Image (cartoon, rainbow, N blue to C red; front, side, top):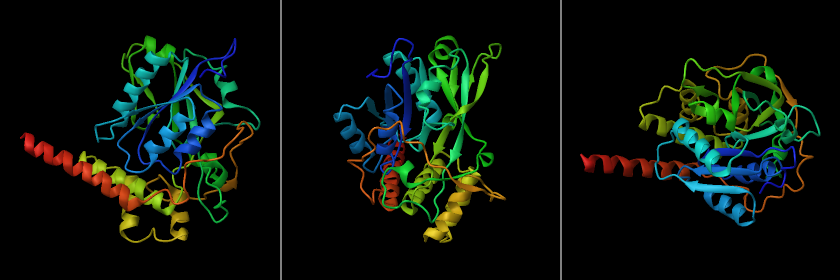
Length: 321
């Protein structure tokens, strides 16, 4: 803990709510241990080996902290906001980054540790970092399990409008606010109080949303079922990709390439540019994965496990009535 913090260094943490991320969670931890002083996870009832892998990494002595959600509902805004405040109170970091397990913090310049940039940001502002989405193609390094080493081609930055927020503790201590769904914004509740937002160009989030056929099906189907259970089935991009699964358009790698290049948009992109833009791994001393297997994701098992929990919750509600 705190091995990066020098006389002028800052205490920097990430917070993540995760569910069924077994194929990427070890890559996420082993990469970010070279940037963050601590990583705080809330596991939202994963039905795969995500909790087992996290516990194994914790036993190694890596700076990760794990709690387990007993509420099946994936209410990311509410739960990640609570996790943000709990992390601020327990660990007293200067900066907190709410990240998903498929997002890797990178510098826009080579051979620069993102931590060096975070050490210089204004702590009285919110900061937005844009995605750089990586997509599967025929040139994937299939023999590599470490995700940023395996998937090295990205869409042009002009195709991504999504961003994520960096929240300094100063903001948490002086303003009442809530993380939006997806952790894209920190919404200040006091209308009369305003916080400056810095749109950062020095940092990017390398985003790896689709990593294999099984993972794609697991991700989309579990998310779709959960949204329907919450009467929130109006996510048009989700509906689009689930429909593709229903129509058998996700059966081959060629199908996956077509789907991945347009994810998560509700319509196909035009004039998509793809370029070889591998994540700079020079900051990593060791990226050897110890706990991740080659065929880590089982979409049917994850969907079944998720559906069983929903059915149990539904039965409990009926019983309570």
